[in-house]
Length: 256
Image (cartoon, rainbow, N blue to C red):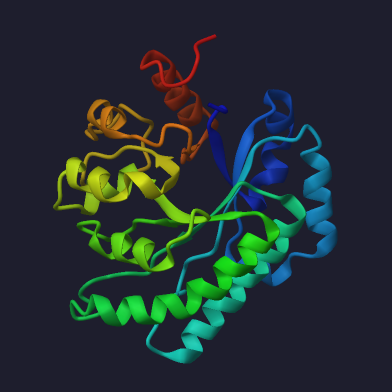
């Protein structure tokens, strides 16, 4: 497998550019909505030049206030516009995967999962078609889901090898009421990317792997898609290195 991606917001690339180039890091780059308001084609070309060592890349799309399954058509339209802007960037950078949030919260939809699914498909079908034309895969991340049924339904309806799941260990640990076995049984065939971080179930702490209470041993034992993109969602270089060391001790990535 390729070495894990380091999650870095676009607006912090300049801060870490020397480290990125020195260690030839694979990256997941987050483009927030505020960044998209100001970013230019020259900025993207500059980023591509910085990454001339040809790392493995993924992109994390914006998510704050966005709702791909919105009942309000204007909200869904704004969400789709943001997503297509990210796809324009992907056409230059050529990432393997773009990660989007599902936007599903069962209480917001009054447990009407079919309504969320109907509206979501109106967003994901054109977005997925554009991504496939570029040669990029889409991965939908679990956020507030307490069990995997909505993501399983979405995967069934989309029915595409280019449209899958980004399984986030920290979110699962914090919000899930279902066991890891159920998550893996339902989503394993669809996992394209992993977001790896830990917490102690008090908040979304983004701790290094092994510093919280998530059962990574069971998780990696159950994981079938071991060839997917591994992303370490660390909040500092020190935490990234600590998670890398953890993966090496578990034999997930080669040791030095």
